[in-house]
Length: 199
Image (cartoon, rainbow, N blue to C red):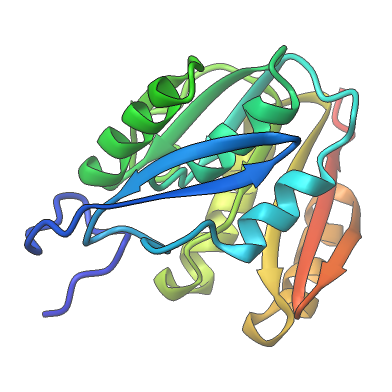
């Protein structure tokens, strides 16, 4: 049975890689490994999402499915004032995320969680590059759970490729949130923002 990046405990042999990326005027250092998503570079969808976050982003942010921490590190580089909690089911990825946050002189809370199972409290923003290969049922449940963990007026930011279901996801999100819009498009990726209007 082949492993996926959303496997809880990868058993594939380690293959540590180190590279740098530039974002928000900073040179950022990353280590990755086998058994994680996008191990050779920052995924372009993740980078697009982080670049689309509002300039006045503030408060508590949840990076759901954080992987090795790319979006957390990019977000903190551009918005050092926010408090980030990063959650992932993949133990190896979460350990790398903690190392990458520390290596770049940042701080974030790490939470081992299968989706939102271990997540408590509410957030001002949730961001996710959802695990498309896990299937529609899994990621749509993630969108529903995100709404339940957003403060009133808080927003879900997600990135999804057009050919991997972005139009149908947008339709579902509009029904779920009421307010859902594409705020950035590039290279087939759509960044969607959904606002929790529930009081």
